[in-house]
Length: 260
Image 1 (cartoon, rainbow, N blue to C red):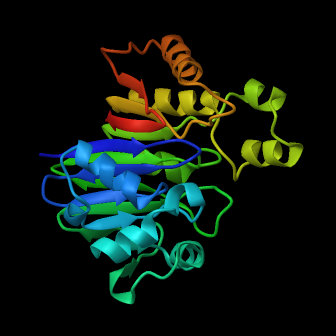
Image 2: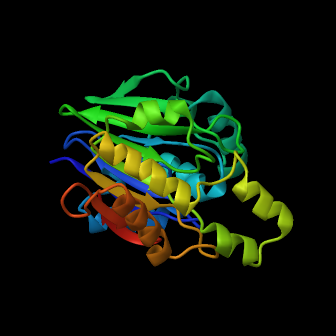
């Protein structure tokens, strides 16, 4: 049976699970291997069941557990060349036999799952989001995207279920405790997507046919689940989109399973 769910989602760690019932993949592994193994057990899987870890970029909240998981459980790691090189400098060596590199914006397959890694805007060497296709349906992960590019829209527009970054409320960020340089980074085109921008992206996707929107990668300091949800709900109302009829809307928790 197919499954698409977040295991962890937020500024302190990210990991998403997707399966077509035969091939089981993780997108990122940004918390400890022990915590990821425990989360997998909650959904009925073992780390030995994982056929690959796909990396979006090399920030610690996306790669912390990658080295240990790959070395201890012989899990292949998929990433572009720039990302894997930066990752190993942080997490330690990943055995050559378990490294599989791809080119951003070029499709590849793992088992029967077609994978489309698409370029995004973030302050790392070569960041990507992912769209997956199996059983005739598309599913996407788009976090740490800075701003919504034409490439992002192109790769999300067919997906029936999408995990979208809704990182911060701009007013909370501007009035919050972060130093100016960090606020400037987050608000920049290579930073993170605000609630407002995420809401507009979500509304556009629903108009194109997306049925399930999950808001994720929320900032612990500059957002709340209620604030993110309400921003999207207000935008949906303005566009005559009915939650529960036209789309399912939810917010992924920082810790805990969220089925999408």
